[in-house]
Image (tube, rainbow over all chains, first blue to last red; front, top):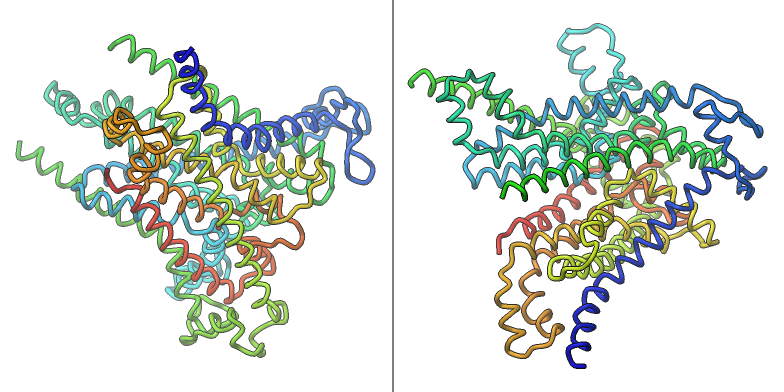
Length: 302
Length: 280
């Protein structure tokens, strides 16, 4: 009897500790996401709101299948979505190119300086997102810092048109997401075993071979992790394209925002959001499966 | 051997130069705002026309609206104060709640084994990984569907959903680095779980809990996207105020406000990061 009571008490402790987070995420995360999925299959009401009938035509409007209801297939949504994927990929590539050498720079430092530099690299990330975007507005606009300096130096006669371009959007995305790429790569580079590099060299590998056959494979998990957590927020972003891309650069986030707040077609906005969700969930699933397999391998080897 | 050492030092030099550039890239935009916030030129901030603290005075309502100050900003000092107050209310409540929830979660995950633990940990990270726009809109649909009035309360709930995950991670790291023998000793000496937690565990994980709280506070204070969707018409936070300012165009007052917010954020984030990085 006493053993039975103790078993319950033992099981009830984690249950009690996990109760708040379970309620919080259940009620205010999973249920809302579920409702959004449902909404994406409903018809928009005449004056905002929804009609509770099964209505797959929101997806038809985006993807071009079952056409019906009042909806017509418009390839522009798919095109904007693919464009967003392209922006997110460019952001991943640029942040990777920036962060990879930077990780080696920090990893090679003496321990006390390392802490300081890591702190300095993380700090700008805490500056408000809007302020970081605003800073690039000040740098890139025709009367901004870069143009003024270049004109004063006589390098250019007319101000360069940098703001409201794809370039500006990528710069903004890169600047705000750099820490997400840096930290996972750094964690990997930091753990690189110097003996392996030495062995590769002793066996006669050129530096390039050592990099390709030893360093790159060993840092691949960091690259993969960083790429995913840069890609995801970049894909759904709408604030950066709104301010740095102007009306010329459209990302799916901007279309979704307008569907919700201006057109007030929530079901259509929800089905566009599902497009982003689908990509995000697929990426996370692939990543988790790979990580788990890696973990299993290690267990099998040990 | 000498050639190799030489090559290594050249590589090190190149990396150092690169690192310096990297830091310039990270800080130059923020330094620029700082410099511009003292520039008297209200039209083109890139052209220096003298030092002034007028933009700061204006924020605190100390400057009568002269020719340089357009009417769009005439009422802003009051509005800023209201936005600051809203932001602080939200950030304090959301980070306090998330710290309690996140710490409890971290304890359960670190100290107990139960079925489905791995899946649970995955679920805990999901709100952080979800793009902000998805979380914001899901909450908007949910709150409106329930007929809840959008306002500070809904913002606090929305922030808690992802801040608890941040606190969970920070406190988990602290718990992982902690010596469990004291906890066992305490239990062996007859202390109940609650006494052990209060007298042994909590004091040891306190830096992690405080660090988690401060990081949650900063992230809540700075959140734009989720707040944007679930804030009511009369519950503007500071970031939403800045968003509205930016929509009206680039103006020197924004620089001053940005500098103050950057400094405030940096101080709190520094304390949070320091507490987090401190070894047991």
